[in-house]
Length: 160
Ligand SMILES: NC(=O)c1ccc[n+]([C@@H]2O[C@H](COP(=O)([O-])OP(=O)(O)OC[C@H]3O[C@@H](n4cnc5c(N)ncnc54)[C@H](OP(=O)(O)O)[C@@H]3O)[C@@H](O)[C@H]2O)c1
Image: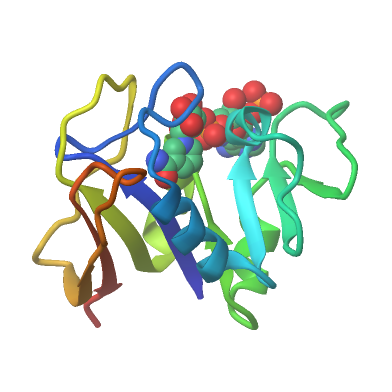
C-alpha cells in the first residue's frame, strides 16, 4: 500500500523556504516511530532539506536528474516501480507536495499531523475530499514547553 505521512497546518501549509514552517519535536518523534524500518520515498527537494538519508529506513529519492546520487540512498526517475512494489509491501511517501501529487491516486492511507495554527508557508497540500476519505483515528498530541502548538495525529483511509 502507498501511505502518505506529513504534517500540515490549519491552511494546509507544509513547507517554507524548503524547510518545515514549525518546530514541533513531538511530531518528529511520531514520524520516526511511524517510518523506522520502512521504505520512505521523497522528492529531491525534501531530500535536500534533510541532513542526508534518515537512519534505519530505506531512503528512495525521486528526481529527473540522472546525475543525482547520495550515500545510502536509492534514486528513481518515475513512480512506476514504486507503485508496483507497493502491491507487495507498504511504502511510505513522505513528501513534498510535488511527490504527493504524483502518488495521490495510488495512495490509500494518509497519516496526517494536523497543527491547529497558521504558519507562513509557501508549499501546500491539497485538502482531503470527505466523500473519498474516512477518518479512522484521531489522537490529540500533548503540548508542553517544547511543543507549543495544539496538534492531532489523524489517520485517513480511502473509501472502498
Ligand atoms: N510538513 C511536512 O510533513 C513536509 C513533508 C515533506 C516536505 N515538506 C516540505 O515541502 C517542501 C518541498 O516540497 P516540494 O513540493 O517543493 O518538493 P519535493 O516534492 O520534495 O521535490 C520536488 C522534486 O522532485 C522531483 N520530481 C518531481 N516530479 C517528478 C517526476 N515526475 N519524476 C521525477 N522526479 C520528479 C524533482 O527533482 P529534480 O529537481 O532533482 O529533478 C523536483 O524538483 C519543503 O519546504 C519541505 O520542508 C514538508
